[in-house]
Amino acid sequence: METAWKAGLEDVIAARSAICQVDGAAGKLYYRGYEIGEVAGAIPFEDVTALLWHGELPSPAASAQFASRLETARGLPAAVADLLRTLPRDSHPLDALRTAVSLAATGDPDVRSSDPEANLRKAFRLMTLVPETVAAWQRIRTGRTPVAASASVSHAAYFLELLEGRAPSREVARVLDLVLTLHADHELNASTFAARVGVATLTDLHAAIVAAIATLKGPRHGGANEDVLAMLLEIGDPARAESYVEARLGARAGLSKHERGDPRVRVPGFGHRVYRVDDARARVLRGMAKSMAEATGRQKLFEVAERVSDAMRARTTLPVNVDFFSAVVYDALGIPPDFCTSIFAVGRVAGWCAHALEQFADNRLIRPRAEYVGAAPRSLAADQRRRTETSMASSSKS
Image (cartoon, rainbow, N blue to C red; front, side, top):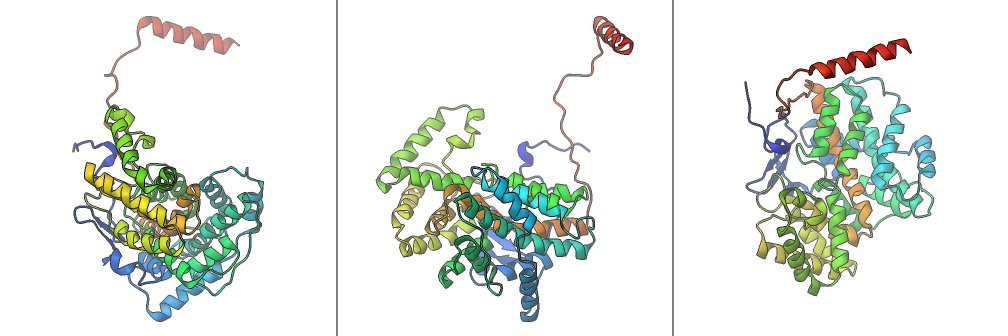
């Protein structure tokens, strides 16, 4: 049976999943049937992760048990810490993370097992390994020593303490918890699909997560939030926002379709493959960005973002996506542009593991086909055959 080819597999159904639903026309996002606006900030990130992995919100007892398993998994492996100290200080944070996860696989006691319980144990370890590595590398590359953190704190608070070397305020921990929840999953995005393709080959869970991290780094996926923050900082003044957008859109209009595909010529934070209206997560983040900017004295950057958003809305129909206002929140948290996508990974590893566990449970090799557009079937010319025969004869004599 022939099927129509679609560039980038746009809107092609490539899997059946019960984890996440994106309604692009309505701008809605659901985790296991719960709309993201209801979940974010109301349910701890740990419970959101349990929901994604197991299908239902945990009871109080199950929630405590899940949190306990996360705490038990904490502790950056010594080999990973040693590796991070050897990396060039200008290594991109996601390169450091990808390399660390790959190394951690070699020391994982369940590395050769992919039965359900072994995969669940590895998922818990990956949930803590990712934030621990991200925090350790940020400290190392900025000339500081990695630190330990309190055991009995939330996942968000644990990560922030590893990052800053001190316990965060309740409000800052709450904000990060919400950010991690918003980034926890988003159906078959590029990195999640990469993880599922890996799992479909029956590779190990760590390898699948490495594939996801490598894919996340691309500027057309997670790397976009780095570009948003860099853009807002470059604009600097709200009064410059409109002229910046005019210039960028004007330059883009004169480019070919191929040239417009370069992420460097777009206005980052706008447009999405699925959403036709504003990203559901962006609506949640906008209010959070405003309050965080005011609380940290970064109102000017939020005003820049608002002016860019207004200018884009007046000139295009592109919806605002999650990257746009998350960049303002990251700035308020003191996070530099090239570190933004690593925070994304700290949240998204929950979804990667959820999809990996689902794929393992009902697996079939993901092996699509390509529509061939090359030369028609043809034969070698007589002189080409002679050259080949002469070359092979010479090789055999030597």
